[in-house]
Image (cartoon, helix red, strand yellow):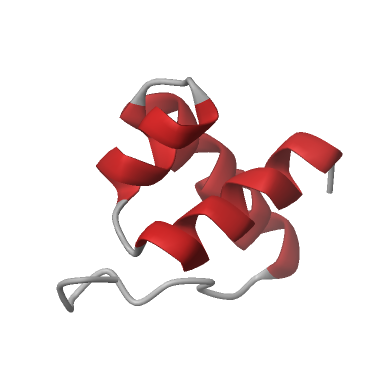
Length: 55
């Protein structure tokens, strides 16, 4: 895990939205999503439940 990925997780926890979290980190939503998916694959677990709104 990188510091940047940790910042993405914290932003998602704060904003409960991939779009708003990406905006707060000054990255695109696909970039944020890709980094979260990499962590989920690395840890073999889901970090966020994407079936609910907000996440």
